Image (cartoon, rainbow, N blue to C red):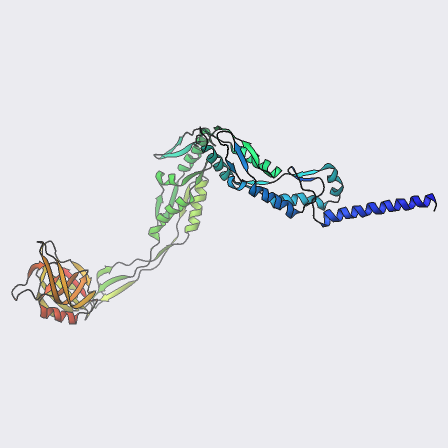
Length: 471
C-alpha cells in the first residue's frame, strides 16, 4: 500500500474517532441532562450532575449545615438557614446550571472559560431581623432599638423620639448564609455588637405627621333621610393609622363608624298592635309599628368615603334608604272594655286584681263572670307586683315555703289551686285565713284567695290567661 493511501486512511480514521468522541460528549451531557464541564454553583463544581442531583445537594446543605457564631460572648451558638428566615431556591439554581445545555456553542466554550451560578436566596426580612435581635439578647451589652412613634395627643398627634440600640447587624447573617450555600459547608460568622439606629428618624415622622394632620382636617360626613352626621376630630383620629412611616386610612375604623351611622336606618319591620272599637276607631296603640328600613348602598358609600379621605378631599356621601309601609294588627275590643284596666276582645278571659281595694274579678271580654272576690295581697316590703302578665304555670296543689318580712319562716303543704303569672307570684287558695280575715296586705307577694274562688278560677282560666294587677 502506498504512503499516500496510508495517509488518507489515517486522516479519515482520525476524523471518525473525533466525531465518535464528540457524539459521545454531546450525548452524555445533552441527552443525559448533565451540567457541562466547568460549571459551578457557587464554589462547588457540579460538572456531570443532573438538575435533581444539584438540587438535592443544595437542599441537604441548607438543611444540615450551620452558621457557627463567634465573638461577643456568643461562641457555641449556631443556626440553620430556615431558623433565621433564609430559604435556598435550590430548584431554580439547578435549572440555571443546566440552562446552557440548550445552546450548542456552550458545549465548546464553558469547558474552557467556566461558568458560575450564584445560589439564589429568599430572605424573610422580618424573621431575619428578629433572629438578629434574639441572638444579640444573649450577649452582654445588647440594647433594644426604640423606634420613634406618632402618638395621639388630645385632638392631634405628637412624635415620641426613638433611641439607638446595640445589636447585631442582620447583614452578617445574610453574608454567612451566602457563603454557606456557595461552599455547601458550615461556616463561621464573627459577630460584634454595633450601634443599630432606628429605621426612621424624627424628621421622617415629622413629614408623616404633617400628612396625618391633613387627613385630620378633611371633612367626613354622611347624609341619610335628610339628616347629616359629621365625624368629629376624635372620630377622625381613629380613621388614621400608621404603617411603615405612612399615614393611611384605617378602613376598618371607618367602616365601623359608618355602620353606627347607618344603624338607625336599618331596622326590622314591626307590625304594630292597636285596640279599636266595633266602629273601627283607634282607642289605644298597644305596640308601635315600625316600617322596615334598609340602607341599599352601604358598600358604595363606604368606598366613596375611604377614597375621598385618602385623597384628602371632602369625604361626603349619602345613604340610600328603602322604607316599606307600616302595618298594623287591630284588636276589636269588647263593648265597654275601653273603661276597664285591660282592653279585652269579645269573650276573652282575663283577671283583674285591684291592689287598692283588695278585690279580684274574672271577666270574659267586658262581662264580669266571677267576683269581686276579696283577697289578701303582698305585705309591706313584699308587695304584689304590678303590671300585665299571663298565667304561665298551674298546679293543683303544692308546698310553699319562704320567709316573712319579720323574719319568721313558713312551710305550708298542699296549697290548692295555684296559678303562677310572674315568676313565683301566683293566685292561689289560702285555707289558713278565716272567713273574716280578708281585704288587707298580709301575704309574701302572692294573691291569697278563698279556696272555693281559687278552685273556680283554676278550672276556668287556661294557661295564657291575662292577669292585670294595679292600684
